[in-house]
Structures are given as structure tokens and as C-alpha cells.
Length: 117
Image 1 (cartoon, rainbow, N blue to C red):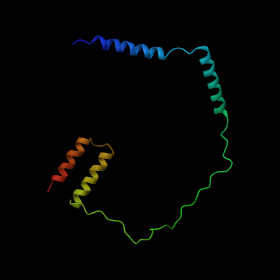
Image 2: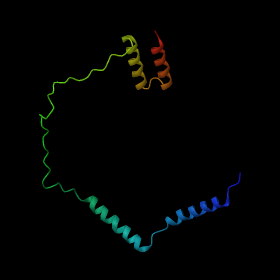
Image 3: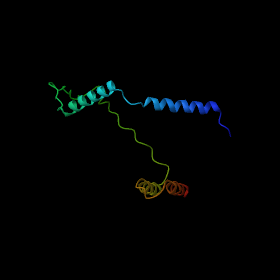
Image 4: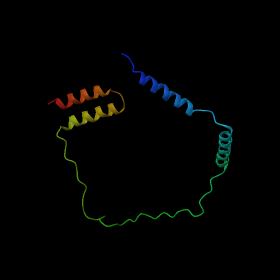
């Protein structure tokens, strides 16, 4: 397999551009960088000034429109599996979440529990 010459030249030009972008600062840039770092250290050393008037927090109203509509929460339908299968699945899930079994073991055991009559 041969690499086209244009690809090699593009790689060389890209490398050259990266290396030239990381050139050393001139004296003006070095002086500006030093002044900036000194100002940053000065600002970091200062204590933060607390705000003169802290914003007032509005309390959340306890009554609002639609609060007492008399609706009850919707209950989920019962699972189509027996209570013993549900408890086995819950135990298996606890083991899986505690990293006592691998995901593969979890899915195999889960499939066996669900496939049992």
C-alpha cells in the first residue's frame, strides 16, 4: 500500500503549523503575561466582598390553583408474574446492583426465572 505524496505533504505542513503556533513569547508578550499573572494573584488574595443587600427570597405559596382537585395518584397495574418470581427477581437485582454477579449472569438468571412455569 502506498501513501500518496499529497497526504505526506499535508501532514508535514500541519505539523509545521502546530509547531510554529507554540512559539516562544516575545518580550512584550512576556511582560503582559507577567502583569496578568500578578493581577490574578492579587485578586485571588483579596477576600470576597459580601453583597450589600442580599436578594430577598419569596416564600413558596402553600395554596395555588389546582392544588385541591380531589385527584388521587394513578397506581401501576400488577405485574403479570407471581409473587415468588417477583421476590426472586428483586433479590437478583440487589445482587446485580451490589456487583456480586456479572451482567451476563444477571440476564441468564433473570431469563431462567421468567421462563420457569
